[in-house]
Length: 266
Image (cartoon, rainbow, N blue to C red; front, side):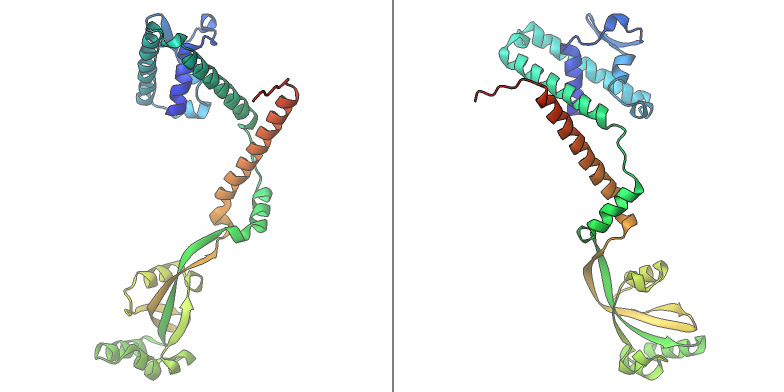
C-alpha cells in the first residue's frame, strides 16, 4: 500500500508520462488531471493486472482520486514549493527509478533444480524441522482370537505390562512390551496419526504383517530432525533468487559508480 501510494504521488506530482500520446480510456479525473487505464495498468505486471477484479480496480482509482485532491491542496497551500517537500519528492523519484531498474534486470531470474539441490547438500545442517517422538509399549499377537483374549484381560484389570509378559508373541513382551522412542518414519502415515492422536496410556490396534499390534505411548518429546529436500525446496529457491538479485544489484551499482563522477564532501 505504501509503495503504491508513493508511485501514485509521483504520477501526480511529476509530469514524466506522455499523456498527449496516451489514447487509453480515462478512468477518472480531478480538475485537469486524468488517470488513464494505461497509466494504472503500467503499475503492475500482466499477471497482477489480470488477477485484479473490477472491485479492486475501483478501489485503486478511488485511492488515486484521494491522493490527487490532497496533492492539489498541497499545491494550493504552497507546500509543494518548500525545499523540504522538493527534496523528499526528488529522493522518492530517484528511489522509484532505481527500484524500476533493478526490477527490470531481475524480473525473469530463475534457478534450476540442480542449483537448489546443490545448495541443500551444502547447507543441510541449517534445515531442521521439529517433530514428535513417542515412547512406546506394545503387545504382538498372531491372530484375532488372541487379540480378543488380551483385550478381555486388560478390561478385567490386568496391567498392560503384565499382559505383554503373558500374551505378547515377540521378544519385547518378556520385558513388558517396551520398545523405546519411535517416530513417524517407523509407521505408515495413517497409523502414526492414529497413535499420535491417542490419549496417553490408551492403546490402539494396528495390523502387523502376520497378526496385530496393541500399541500405546507413555511419554512424548519434541525433537529436531533433518528436513527433507522437498520440504525446503521452495524456501531454498527463494534464498537463491534473493542472492542472485543481490549480486545483480551490486554489479549494477558498481558499474554505475565507476561510470559516474562522485564527489563526497562530508
